[in-house]
Length: 464
Image 1 (cartoon, rainbow, N blue to C red):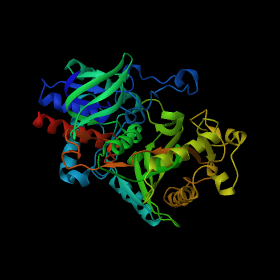
Image 2: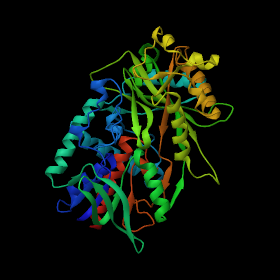
Image 3: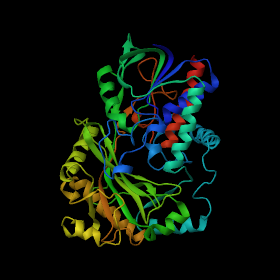
Image 4: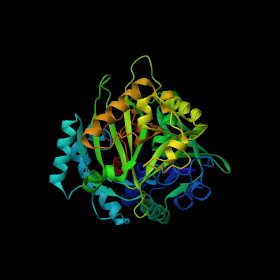
């Protein structure tokens, strides 16, 4: 098969590369290779049967629009949130492109309401409480798509691309890159009908967090210049809505950052879901990790959010993703393949949580098949200590956050540790190869991944 551009991965960065390139050069032959299914077939069987059935690949993390769009669907509208892309391209270009991409989302049906702009005095009060607790508040305007509405928006984008002649190969797993004489000239993929060779003038790898490990191995195999970066490990915290009510009403999602003693690792909150639901996602090899969903219409009595500890590794160690995966497998082992849940008070008391204790708590788990147990037997001491001390600090700013009944689910892992070396136009040291989105190590989240794709589409149009 011959194409002008082949894009590996139909997450936000891959989608927006195709959108922009097609708009600027409608005659360009674009092929997207996607391991998962189209949006209309990405329903999770757990919603019907009540438990994870182990889809391969997982329908929540894989398919058109990627993992992020099927979690909570938040667009952060500030360059200060979403990774380190502004360091590569500059803050002015990053912010201008955020505004361009935001308009595209609106054209495809995103809600025109922006959260976090209505109550500046209340935000100042929350910031003061955070400062008093030794924390930094990062308040960012949020356009909340919602899990179910995001699916509708991306379905419109999927149909638009198909109608415009973009070829999308679903259920196709990219096995390797074709690199000859220092140039990437295509990919090998395997689909229902066997192996496919796709030759192209340019190759864009945009495989998201799920594909970070795969891309790291390719970088090593093909001498694609990269550095091992940080990896985030932690828990998903769930509290009653009453605890987070003030923050939810004012900010919808307020990000808190701290550097708690004794290790001074960076710890942050992430992906806050008011009235949301804790969920399970499955990665290759059967690794189960925890995430959170937030719907526009369907609401629970709880708010969930991640508390993540950033780990930076130095020589000679260079396998941060494998390290985090092994920690996750320990959690899965203790939960017999399920997500572990433990009450914060039990952690402080040095005991495991029992199912009967959960049943009589104020906070009822929204992940109903999570297994009560002891996450401290799996998470490293450094990680667990940082989480506990950070939560106690957050409790000073948000009373009740670290109550005895607060639930902690594990493992919450974010795989974006492979930082691919590129110039400001996303050229790697291998000619014709570009790496985008969370798997590149430069972005974290829907908006910045979309921004990277939007810019890439423009650069490719110039080159073609």
